[in-house]
Image (cartoon, rainbow, N blue to C red; front, side):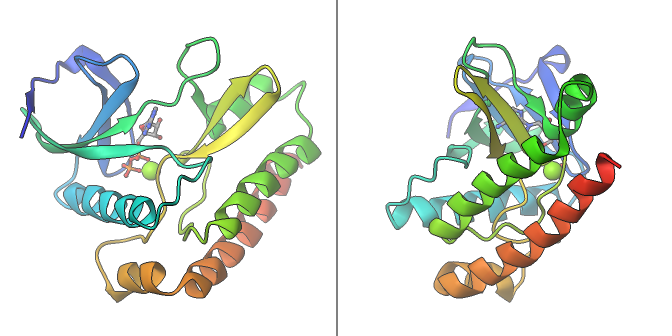
Length: 193
Ligand SMILES: Nc1ncnc2c1ncn2[C@@H]1O[C@H](COP(=O)(O)OP(=O)(O)O)[C@@H](O)[C@H]1O
Ligand SMILES: [Mg+2]
């Protein structure tokens, strides 16, 4: 397994459970390592789930690409593509994007973006378990803005039988995704109220 030394200044962002570092040798990638004790479970669930999709030969456009495990000074980590805009700059998480663009942005636009994301996830039977403003990033390109899921797929809150059910039963995954998007859409409407 490859080893990387992650410097403090290479920290891109953090969630509740994991730190996300710039990959030291590849400007297009990032490495996620645990922040909390159970952070490694998140990495395992996400990695396993994304691998199961690629095993089914599903290259899902709105999902960040996941590579594999590496060893670091912060413990084991998983390498992902870093989400960047077409011009190469780091993309924003949905929360920061809305904050920054609030004046020009309408609720309908964000709902449309969410609808497109949902459409893809249902088409590929991706189990979206935690769609929120920090687990979704906004990739800007010439044709507009697209939402990309970077977390909250394949299960939440630790390992359980559900992680396996989402993989084995596509309808079960889609059911979860539909439910979660209903909540997410309500949330979006509240932000713009
Ligand atoms: N592939 C990625 N590209 C760019 N930034 C990312 C990527 N994955 C995560 N991040 C950033 O790191 C933060 C934490 O990552 P996340 O996977 O949500 O960790 P947690 O499991 O702690 O919620 C995100 O909110 C985002 O700002
Ligand atoms: Mg998260």
